[in-house]
Image (cartoon, rainbow, N blue to C red; front, side, top):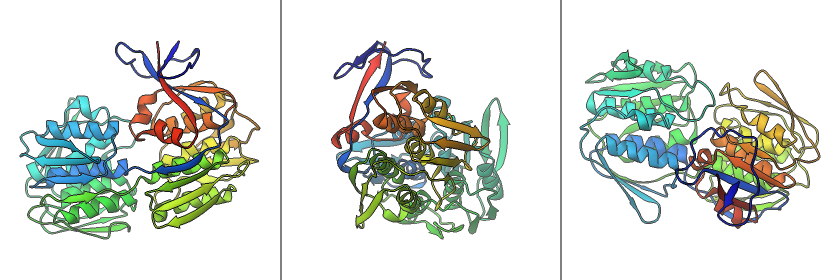
Length: 446
């Protein structure tokens, strides 16, 4: 039986949640009542995927780093705990501000119990290698969406002059006095680009990263590094040039808005026939999403340099989506977009090119009545007249958002376990949806 914080959620049967229950409470669950037309204003939080590498980069700075607008997310808290274990003082201040003071790296190993929670924890390897001359960690954990190998990171470290050692499930990287190098990435990996950028900041000479990731979060990390005294040029293009410096200093920095959160709420407006104004966005970061929403029949208007309005159609039209590195359609919005397409007029093809295991949400959508067939790395989505509420579970962060959005369109109540995945990447997700008219409640299941 689900115990609601407010209201009664009803029975929840037939699922085997992936996570342990909250001690003394049971499993957290979200209940979503369908049928609401969302309308109102939503302020978008700062980008999780920009905050995490910048937090890791604070290990490079001799003075305090002050980050403004930091979202209160589980992944952010995990990274803060990791920095604390490595010898930093991390203090939350008013107005979502974080102050990080590097007290001297007494430890060069990232604890397994934190690394296993989040793949982004591997981002401390570059800064540790640059500052301490060595770094050690276990293989990182996180969402079960694909292999996401770390070989590109290690290839970059080796080119800078580091040595690798693998033993007992751990990786140790050593290399004092790194030297700049020319590094070609076989795939434009975001985290590999970021890790190599950070390590190269304190290397002697110049490092060129070719076929680099061009995502806005990479540009934001470069912005922080430059504000701290680094010399990074070309971020946002496929060639990043890093000139090594002797040291970085602390600085204050404002993190960019979260384009994935913004895209999620844009899709929510489109699929519910809603009218939502999004504040604190960078429209340039959302061009691919805007293009697909307009193709699906939604109206998207840029009301200012930092705000967008999305008006949804009565029923979306089918569109084909292919995920690609930026500036293509983001893989992190593939699952939420598929939720919209389950009720679109016509048949859509969704092709996932970034991660090989990112269709775990499909079976859950089918529990709600969606008509989806998987063929290799593509999903064939035939729009249906209606979805019906059902008990489902989130297998990863974006699958969780997908199921909430599907619940907003469904008839009846959709009950979602695996809520802890949503907490990793969406700040006040339930509260923001409630403010625009969604009926969503969080409770626990015995």
